[in-house]
Length: 329
Image (cartoon, rainbow, N blue to C red):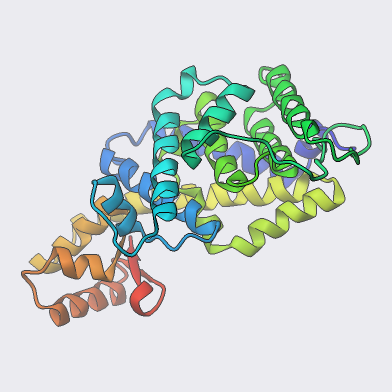
Protein backbone atom coordinates (compact mmCIF):
# COMPACT_ATOMS: atom_id res chain seq x y z
CA UNK A 1 0.00 0.00 0.00
CA UNK A 2 1.38 3.38 -1.02
CA UNK A 3 2.03 6.21 1.37
CA UNK A 4 1.65 9.86 0.35
CA UNK A 5 5.42 10.25 0.36
CA UNK A 6 5.81 7.31 -2.03
CA UNK A 7 3.25 8.82 -4.40
CA UNK A 8 4.86 12.25 -4.17
CA UNK A 9 8.27 10.73 -4.93
CA UNK A 10 7.16 10.19 -8.53
CA UNK A 11 8.92 13.00 -10.36
CA UNK A 12 6.16 14.28 -12.62
CA UNK A 13 3.62 14.57 -9.81
CA UNK A 14 6.07 16.36 -7.53
CA UNK A 15 6.97 18.76 -10.36
CA UNK A 16 3.28 19.52 -10.96
CA UNK A 17 2.74 20.27 -7.28
CA UNK A 18 5.70 22.65 -7.26
CA UNK A 19 4.43 24.34 -10.44
CA UNK A 20 0.98 24.83 -8.93
CA UNK A 21 2.57 26.46 -5.87
CA UNK A 22 4.39 28.81 -8.26
CA UNK A 23 1.07 29.64 -9.91
CA UNK A 24 -0.29 30.55 -6.48
CA UNK A 25 2.64 32.94 -5.99
CA UNK A 26 2.11 34.42 -9.45
CA UNK A 27 -1.49 35.22 -8.56
CA UNK A 28 -0.26 37.32 -5.65
CA UNK A 29 1.73 39.40 -8.16
CA UNK A 30 -1.24 39.82 -10.52
CA UNK A 31 -3.87 41.28 -8.21
CA UNK A 32 -4.43 44.21 -10.55
CA UNK A 33 -4.91 41.97 -13.58
CA UNK A 34 -7.08 39.23 -12.08
CA UNK A 35 -10.05 41.43 -11.27
CA UNK A 36 -13.17 40.98 -9.19
CA UNK A 37 -15.08 40.38 -12.42
CA UNK A 38 -12.75 37.48 -13.21
CA UNK A 39 -13.37 35.97 -9.78
CA UNK A 40 -17.09 36.39 -10.41
CA UNK A 41 -16.89 34.65 -13.78
CA UNK A 42 -14.83 31.84 -12.21
CA UNK A 43 -17.67 31.31 -9.75
CA UNK A 44 -20.19 30.97 -12.58
CA UNK A 45 -17.96 28.65 -14.65
CA UNK A 46 -17.03 26.47 -11.67
CA UNK A 47 -20.60 26.03 -10.44
CA UNK A 48 -22.27 25.45 -13.80
CA UNK A 49 -19.56 23.01 -14.97
CA UNK A 50 -19.68 21.06 -11.70
CA UNK A 51 -23.45 20.70 -12.09
CA UNK A 52 -23.12 19.61 -15.73
CA UNK A 53 -20.52 16.95 -14.86
CA UNK A 54 -23.34 15.25 -12.93
CA UNK A 55 -25.81 15.57 -15.82
CA UNK A 56 -27.49 18.96 -15.22
CA UNK A 57 -28.45 20.88 -18.37
CA UNK A 58 -27.84 24.38 -17.05
CA UNK A 59 -25.81 26.88 -19.10
CA UNK A 60 -23.56 29.60 -17.69
CA UNK A 61 -25.93 32.45 -18.56
CA UNK A 62 -28.86 30.55 -17.04
CA UNK A 63 -26.95 30.13 -13.79
CA UNK A 64 -26.26 33.86 -13.79
CA UNK A 65 -29.97 34.52 -14.17
CA UNK A 66 -30.67 32.35 -11.15
CA UNK A 67 -28.02 34.22 -9.16
CA UNK A 68 -29.72 37.49 -10.12
CA UNK A 69 -33.10 36.21 -8.91
CA UNK A 70 -34.62 35.65 -12.35
CA UNK A 71 -36.89 32.69 -13.06
CA UNK A 72 -36.14 29.92 -15.54
CA UNK A 73 -39.52 28.50 -16.63
CA UNK A 74 -37.89 25.55 -18.46
CA UNK A 75 -36.31 24.29 -15.22
CA UNK A 76 -38.00 21.86 -12.86
CA UNK A 77 -38.23 22.77 -9.18
CA UNK A 78 -35.62 20.07 -8.41
CA UNK A 79 -33.15 21.50 -10.96
CA UNK A 80 -33.66 25.01 -9.63
CA UNK A 81 -33.29 23.91 -5.99
CA UNK A 82 -30.09 21.98 -6.65
CA UNK A 83 -28.51 24.83 -8.62
CA UNK A 84 -29.35 27.37 -5.91
CA UNK A 85 -28.12 24.96 -3.24
CA UNK A 86 -24.77 24.59 -4.97
CA UNK A 87 -24.46 28.36 -5.26
CA UNK A 88 -25.10 28.76 -1.53
CA UNK A 89 -22.57 26.07 -0.58
CA UNK A 90 -19.91 27.51 -2.93
CA UNK A 91 -20.42 31.00 -1.50
CA UNK A 92 -20.28 29.74 2.08
CA UNK A 93 -16.88 28.20 1.39
CA UNK A 94 -15.63 31.41 -0.25
CA UNK A 95 -16.76 33.50 2.73
CA UNK A 96 -16.06 31.22 5.67
CA UNK A 97 -13.25 28.85 4.66
CA UNK A 98 -10.95 30.02 7.45
CA UNK A 99 -13.57 29.23 10.10
CA UNK A 100 -14.88 25.99 8.55
CA UNK A 101 -13.04 23.03 10.15
CA UNK A 102 -12.59 19.77 8.28
CA UNK A 103 -15.08 17.86 10.37
CA UNK A 104 -18.04 15.57 9.99
CA UNK A 105 -20.33 18.41 11.11
CA UNK A 106 -18.99 20.78 8.44
CA UNK A 107 -19.35 18.19 5.68
CA UNK A 108 -22.90 17.33 6.73
CA UNK A 109 -23.75 21.03 6.86
CA UNK A 110 -22.35 21.69 3.37
CA UNK A 111 -24.18 18.67 1.96
CA UNK A 112 -27.47 19.80 3.52
CA UNK A 113 -27.00 23.33 2.17
CA UNK A 114 -26.13 22.01 -1.29
CA UNK A 115 -29.04 19.56 -1.50
CA UNK A 116 -31.62 21.73 0.27
CA UNK A 117 -32.51 19.04 2.77
CA UNK A 118 -31.10 17.29 5.82
CA UNK A 119 -28.08 15.15 5.03
CA UNK A 120 -28.32 11.40 5.48
CA UNK A 121 -25.69 8.73 4.94
CA UNK A 122 -25.92 6.17 2.17
CA UNK A 123 -27.42 2.89 3.35
CA UNK A 124 -27.27 -0.76 2.34
CA UNK A 125 -24.08 -0.70 0.30
CA UNK A 126 -20.52 -1.84 0.92
CA UNK A 127 -18.44 1.18 1.90
CA UNK A 128 -14.77 1.20 0.99
CA UNK A 129 -12.11 2.32 3.41
CA UNK A 130 -9.49 4.95 2.70
CA UNK A 131 -7.02 3.32 0.30
CA UNK A 132 -4.14 4.79 2.28
CA UNK A 133 -4.96 2.38 5.08
CA UNK A 134 -3.59 -1.14 5.18
CA UNK A 135 -6.67 -2.89 6.62
CA UNK A 136 -8.69 -5.09 4.26
CA UNK A 137 -11.77 -3.61 2.60
CA UNK A 138 -14.93 -3.76 4.69
CA UNK A 139 -17.43 -6.33 3.44
CA UNK A 140 -20.14 -5.86 6.05
CA UNK A 141 -23.25 -4.03 4.79
CA UNK A 142 -23.97 -2.23 8.07
CA UNK A 143 -24.96 1.34 7.15
CA UNK A 144 -23.09 2.87 10.08
CA UNK A 145 -19.78 1.83 8.47
CA UNK A 146 -20.24 4.64 5.93
CA UNK A 147 -20.24 7.11 8.80
CA UNK A 148 -17.28 5.38 10.45
CA UNK A 149 -15.28 5.44 7.19
CA UNK A 150 -15.94 9.15 6.70
CA UNK A 151 -14.80 9.92 10.24
CA UNK A 152 -11.68 7.87 9.60
CA UNK A 153 -10.54 9.88 6.57
CA UNK A 154 -11.38 13.15 8.37
CA UNK A 155 -9.20 12.04 11.30
CA UNK A 156 -6.41 11.04 8.93
CA UNK A 157 -6.53 14.45 7.25
CA UNK A 158 -6.50 16.43 10.47
CA UNK A 159 -3.72 14.29 11.93
CA UNK A 160 -1.47 14.91 8.90
CA UNK A 161 -2.51 18.48 8.03
CA UNK A 162 0.65 20.08 9.36
CA UNK A 163 3.03 17.28 8.34
CA UNK A 164 2.19 16.41 4.74
CA UNK A 165 2.20 18.50 1.56
CA UNK A 166 -1.15 20.30 1.68
CA UNK A 167 -2.02 19.83 -1.99
CA UNK A 168 -1.19 16.13 -1.96
CA UNK A 169 -3.11 15.60 1.28
CA UNK A 170 -6.15 17.44 -0.13
CA UNK A 171 -6.15 15.34 -3.29
CA UNK A 172 -5.90 12.08 -1.35
CA UNK A 173 -8.76 13.20 0.91
CA UNK A 174 -10.99 13.79 -2.13
CA UNK A 175 -10.11 10.40 -3.63
CA UNK A 176 -10.89 8.69 -0.31
CA UNK A 177 -14.15 10.64 0.01
CA UNK A 178 -15.22 9.47 -3.46
CA UNK A 179 -14.22 5.90 -2.59
CA UNK A 180 -16.68 5.99 0.31
CA UNK A 181 -19.44 7.94 -1.49
CA UNK A 182 -21.04 8.61 1.91
CA UNK A 183 -24.31 10.15 0.69
CA UNK A 184 -27.12 8.89 -1.52
CA UNK A 185 -26.72 11.90 -3.85
CA UNK A 186 -24.33 14.76 -4.45
CA UNK A 187 -20.97 13.10 -3.66
CA UNK A 188 -19.24 14.29 -6.85
CA UNK A 189 -20.47 17.86 -6.51
CA UNK A 190 -19.57 17.97 -2.82
CA UNK A 191 -16.08 16.55 -3.46
CA UNK A 192 -15.25 19.48 -5.76
CA UNK A 193 -16.54 21.96 -3.19
CA UNK A 194 -14.49 20.27 -0.48
CA UNK A 195 -11.37 20.49 -2.63
CA UNK A 196 -11.86 24.26 -2.92
CA UNK A 197 -12.29 24.42 0.85
CA UNK A 198 -9.14 22.39 1.51
CA UNK A 199 -6.96 24.51 -0.78
CA UNK A 200 -8.32 27.81 0.51
CA UNK A 201 -7.61 26.68 4.08
CA UNK A 202 -4.10 25.78 2.96
CA UNK A 203 -3.45 29.29 1.64
CA UNK A 204 -3.85 28.49 -2.08
CA UNK A 205 -5.92 31.54 -3.02
CA UNK A 206 -5.18 30.92 -6.70
CA UNK A 207 -8.12 28.46 -6.61
CA UNK A 208 -10.49 31.48 -6.47
CA UNK A 209 -9.50 32.27 -10.05
CA UNK A 210 -9.34 28.72 -11.42
CA UNK A 211 -12.53 27.00 -12.60
CA UNK A 212 -10.88 23.56 -12.73
CA UNK A 213 -14.39 22.09 -12.99
CA UNK A 214 -14.62 23.38 -16.58
CA UNK A 215 -11.64 21.26 -17.65
CA UNK A 216 -13.13 18.25 -15.84
CA UNK A 217 -16.41 18.79 -17.68
CA UNK A 218 -14.56 18.88 -21.00
CA UNK A 219 -12.78 15.63 -20.07
CA UNK A 220 -15.46 13.95 -18.01
CA UNK A 221 -14.52 10.44 -19.18
CA UNK A 222 -10.84 10.92 -18.36
CA UNK A 223 -11.74 12.31 -14.93
CA UNK A 224 -13.95 9.33 -14.09
CA UNK A 225 -11.48 6.83 -15.57
CA UNK A 226 -8.63 8.22 -13.46
CA UNK A 227 -10.76 7.89 -10.33
CA UNK A 228 -11.82 4.36 -11.26
CA UNK A 229 -8.23 3.27 -11.95
CA UNK A 230 -7.08 4.54 -8.56
CA UNK A 231 -9.91 2.77 -6.77
CA UNK A 232 -9.62 -0.51 -8.70
CA UNK A 233 -5.84 -0.72 -8.30
CA UNK A 234 -5.78 0.82 -4.82
CA UNK A 235 -3.19 3.20 -6.25
CA UNK A 236 -3.46 6.95 -5.64
CA UNK A 237 -1.22 8.00 -8.51
CA UNK A 238 -3.67 7.96 -11.51
CA UNK A 239 -6.25 10.17 -9.78
CA UNK A 240 -3.75 12.55 -8.20
CA UNK A 241 -1.79 12.97 -11.43
CA UNK A 242 -4.92 13.63 -13.47
CA UNK A 243 -6.23 16.15 -10.95
CA UNK A 244 -2.89 18.01 -10.80
CA UNK A 245 -2.67 18.23 -14.61
CA UNK A 246 -6.21 19.64 -14.65
CA UNK A 247 -5.31 22.27 -12.06
CA UNK A 248 -2.17 23.31 -13.93
CA UNK A 249 -3.87 23.60 -17.33
CA UNK A 250 -6.78 25.51 -15.80
CA UNK A 251 -4.35 27.82 -14.01
CA UNK A 252 -2.41 28.52 -17.20
CA UNK A 253 -5.66 29.52 -18.89
CA UNK A 254 -6.11 32.18 -16.21
CA UNK A 255 -2.68 33.70 -16.82
CA UNK A 256 -2.98 33.44 -20.61
CA UNK A 257 -6.33 35.22 -20.35
CA UNK A 258 -4.74 38.02 -18.32
CA UNK A 259 -1.93 38.33 -20.89
CA UNK A 260 -4.36 38.29 -23.80
CA UNK A 261 -6.32 41.10 -22.14
CA UNK A 262 -3.22 43.31 -22.29
CA UNK A 263 -2.59 42.55 -25.97
CA UNK A 264 -6.24 43.16 -26.93
CA UNK A 265 -6.26 46.55 -25.23
CA UNK A 266 -3.37 47.66 -27.44
CA UNK A 267 -5.15 46.64 -30.69
CA UNK A 268 -7.57 48.75 -32.71
CA UNK A 269 -11.07 47.24 -32.53
CA UNK A 270 -14.41 48.44 -33.83
CA UNK A 271 -16.91 49.70 -31.20
CA UNK A 272 -18.92 46.47 -31.55
CA UNK A 273 -15.83 44.24 -31.29
CA UNK A 274 -14.69 46.16 -28.20
CA UNK A 275 -18.08 45.63 -26.57
CA UNK A 276 -17.95 41.90 -27.34
CA UNK A 277 -14.40 41.55 -25.96
CA UNK A 278 -15.31 43.52 -22.83
CA UNK A 279 -18.29 41.26 -22.26
CA UNK A 280 -16.16 38.12 -22.58
CA UNK A 281 -13.50 39.58 -20.27
CA UNK A 282 -16.13 40.24 -17.61
CA UNK A 283 -17.99 36.95 -17.97
CA UNK A 284 -15.00 34.69 -18.86
CA UNK A 285 -17.21 32.70 -21.26
CA UNK A 286 -20.37 33.88 -23.03
CA UNK A 287 -22.91 32.08 -25.22
CA UNK A 288 -23.84 33.57 -28.61
CA UNK A 289 -27.45 33.98 -27.51
CA UNK A 290 -26.44 36.13 -24.54
CA UNK A 291 -24.18 38.34 -26.69
CA UNK A 292 -27.01 38.90 -29.20
CA UNK A 293 -29.49 39.55 -26.38
CA UNK A 294 -27.21 41.99 -24.51
CA UNK A 295 -26.06 43.90 -27.61
CA UNK A 296 -29.56 44.13 -29.08
CA UNK A 297 -28.84 47.60 -30.50
CA UNK A 298 -26.82 45.79 -33.20
CA UNK A 299 -28.42 43.47 -35.79
CA UNK A 300 -27.82 39.78 -35.07
CA UNK A 301 -26.01 39.12 -38.41
CA UNK A 302 -23.62 42.03 -37.68
CA UNK A 303 -22.79 40.60 -34.24
CA UNK A 304 -22.12 37.16 -35.71
CA UNK A 305 -19.80 38.62 -38.35
CA UNK A 306 -17.91 40.52 -35.64
CA UNK A 307 -17.57 37.30 -33.62
CA UNK A 308 -16.25 35.46 -36.67
CA UNK A 309 -13.65 38.20 -37.27
CA UNK A 310 -12.49 38.14 -33.67
CA UNK A 311 -12.11 34.34 -33.80
CA UNK A 312 -10.29 34.49 -37.14
CA UNK A 313 -7.88 37.12 -35.79
CA UNK A 314 -7.18 35.03 -32.67
CA UNK A 315 -8.65 37.63 -30.28
CA UNK A 316 -11.23 35.22 -28.85
CA UNK A 317 -11.83 31.46 -28.93
CA UNK A 318 -14.99 29.66 -30.04
CA UNK A 319 -16.23 26.51 -28.30
CA UNK A 320 -19.07 24.15 -29.16
CA UNK A 321 -21.50 24.11 -32.06
CA UNK A 322 -24.94 25.44 -32.94
CA UNK A 323 -27.00 26.74 -30.03
CA UNK A 324 -24.34 25.53 -27.58
CA UNK A 325 -21.61 27.80 -29.02
CA UNK A 326 -19.83 30.03 -26.52
CA UNK A 327 -16.75 32.26 -26.58
CA UNK A 328 -13.80 32.89 -24.28
CA UNK A 329 -10.49 34.76 -24.41
